[in-house]
Length: 315
Image (cartoon, rainbow, N blue to C red; front, top):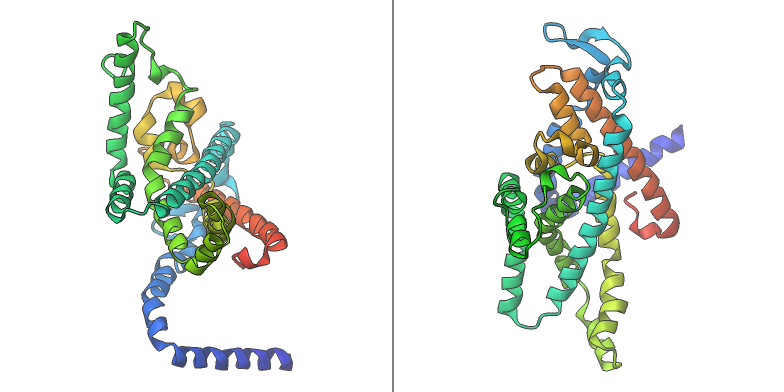
């Protein structure tokens, strides 16, 4: 016990010394710390609402405790496996393909020598990130509408039959992935581009002097140096792997029940099921399920990373 107290005192003294030494840096991160404490840590006890029959007059902690009854909402209709599977598979593809395209574009742009063309390329690729998902839904509708959509116009001009895209559930897996990557690649590319900028240029100069080609410099310097950034972003993404992009799916699919088997995710399913109901416990139960699942995935993957590359692990 005495050793533990001594250890705590030593750490506290070291922490105070670090604050005095880097006062400006601590002041810079203070707003972020306050934000997370107020909006992320203080509301955590509110997760208890998922286990009660909420009564607004009694409050969360005064309401009747009902255990796991609110979770039957997900299990009762037999849709839990379908929507969980869809959410996992979509997010897995988004994470992997998204990072692949982001790294590829970041590497290509970093190799461009013309400054004005590099800036122009970055701006063009980043632009979709600022487009509203509602507008994306309008794009999709105008592309795949049966009567006057762009795709069917091309098909008819080639002498082919029109295709009913909004009745073909299978094809929407690819359409959703396309729009997600198209919209998110630019923002992720900037993160990887920043990481490339931070690589010591002397490494490239030494490799160039030794006769390494441009491809070899990318393969043996740039890509390995991006590994820590990739693993970090992957771990962050895995934390929300059971949280779907509601705005993307809802604006593309809407209430088209024909497409639900292939495109329904947890967020859209819950939205439809609770539409018009003021039922906080059921919504909280779904959020709790997503959070616990994400926590388990992050801890598992982080443990694996720690075994293979300890320096790249989050903790």
